Length: 183
Figure 1 (cartoon, rainbow, N blue to C red):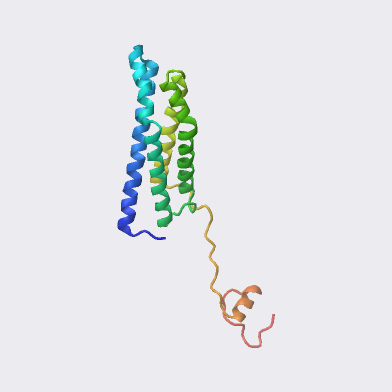
Figure 2 (figure 1 turned 45 degrees about the vertical axis):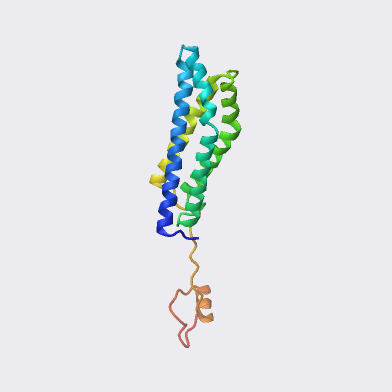
């Protein structure tokens, strides 16, 4: 599947916007968690922690899935592929890992903190790790390091029987063997 240039641009815009939304939601998560940790006012702490479930799980997961979906379409529709280049495979792995962490690690911690039964210090880990991984994915998008996962093998065009036999015998493309030539 090859995307037409106009469609590729729209998918790229959607990919960038969804990743930007994800980064923004992570920033707000960090601000609310840090506010709850450093504030001395119980009302501010309570409000900060109770605001977390309103946006931190489902909007963040939605942004993650949109980023993943548009990235897969771009991978399949462009020369980069999904697992043709190391940087694309790394971004794919980071996105899938983070979506799973949102569901299975962040959601329970957010719910406990919002119910004021959990420790908000436990939310510092996602506040640090998530933006770092998203920054890593952004850097990969710009610099595209590491090259191809597998080098493409160039299979020579199949010639006639005499050329194939000459190649097997160590002759390299010098044409047919001359009449009367001996080895």
